[in-house]
Length: 253
Image 1 (cartoon, one colour):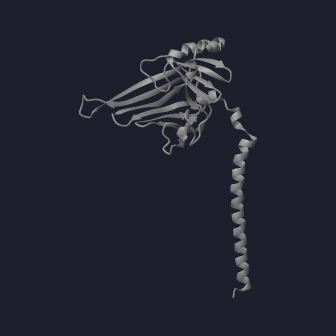
Image 2: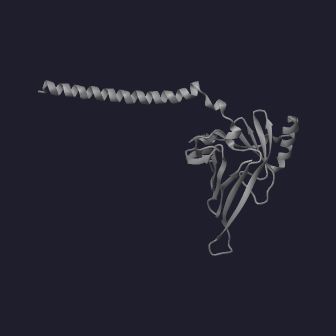
Image 3: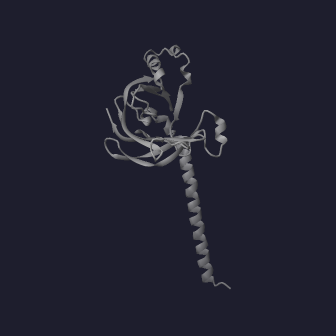
């Protein structure tokens, strides 16, 4: 038989456990509720300036190191390596309704030693790449708002769908979302953090990689909100073909 004193101790222990479990459970429920309420009562995305988020501004200069490795039958290793440095400058900016057209002196997503003018169009939370052969027409339209001057330019490629978060996916072909391997679609992975000086203090910003994998190719663009494209990597499986672009410095206007 259990003595009365022992019964009291057991009762106290059980009561304490119930209180602890209840407290933890309510904490989890309240945490979930708090996260949910952030989006229900304070839709902070309403206040995000996605032009600032993408990190472009007239006069801003991005400096990159480029490393390339490609097949060659001219040496025993079977490949050659190249290292170069390049800068990309935002040379102009044209405000449009809920966005802006930026003109750069090189391709931000595939910079070349032989520079040619390119464009980045940001509308709401969408980012489009404007190729060299289309950019002058876009500039004319941005200046005089004559949309009828486009002549079928609606096929312009969408690059990003902002904002980024871990495990985000997007694609022009929704059937690819049923794949188990994430191929043939854009998917986002969080890759740690980046310490950024905003002019007054150091702040910690998330770093994301946006992957796109096809059969033989793997490529990703690494992006830091409010800074810009920090790295680009392309790797071809089979014949050696690899290219990596690293952001080394940013000059502000």
